[in-house]
Amino acid sequence: MVFAIPSRACVVVIDVELHRGNMGFQEAVKMLVDVVRVEEGSAISEVKRYTQTRLSR
Image (spheres, rainbow, N blue to C red):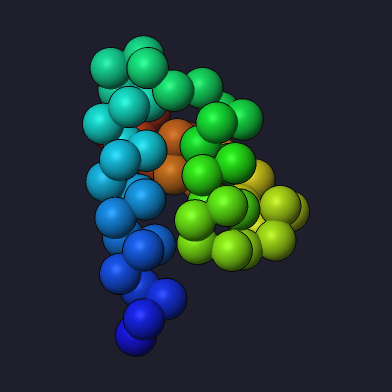
């Protein structure tokens, strides 16, 4: 459960910052690695999945 809070907070920040053009793909990956402490490969997959989901709406 403790993992979910920083993860969800990062997703909110990433969503807003990507949408506003204030954050790039690599910055989103770095945030997940640094804040949520996921492995880089997992972070890359998550950001790809997340951005593809947002783009396909």
